[in-house]
Length: 185
Figure 1 (tube, rainbow, N blue to C red):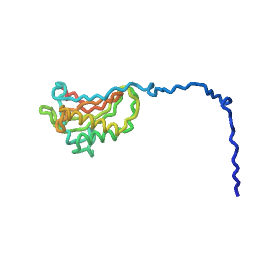
Figure 2: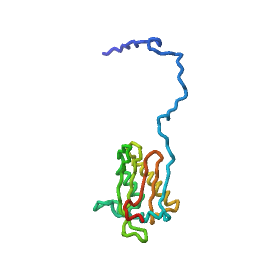
Figure 3: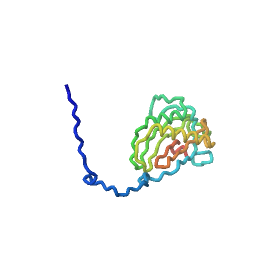
Figure 4: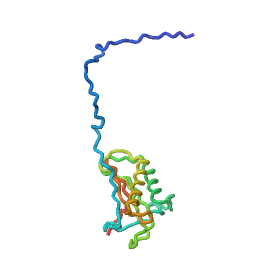
């Protein structure tokens, strides 16, 4: 049989604990003073007036990831390919010194005078001074915003996609483009 016996709590006076009841504590605290300035996200779409960029991809149908013999992206559109990239890059660590997470995918050519029947489309996230890990869901949302934004403003269409970049305003840039010299005039 057990007998419960409550133990006495030790009591300490406020003066012995070093508490000053007359001390003023400011009610205004700037909880954001340690944070860096956040800029607004900025979208830049490549378009037909850009004489430097001489490429366009039919973004309705991916062919393959560059360097792979087989892949499950065949015939998937650029939205799905970008989301796959983001999912696979989830957790990529950026150290704040211009790092990047990047993959390249083949899409059919949609530019009339392009020298190849396929376009190597680079999907990447660049780090311009922001330390952290890539969140696959956020990346997917940013890539969707980039693609949809460039289609909505008329710079691209899904079957004639030119690419672009979306800066998040705090150091990361989401980028879809052709990263080969022959894509530029």
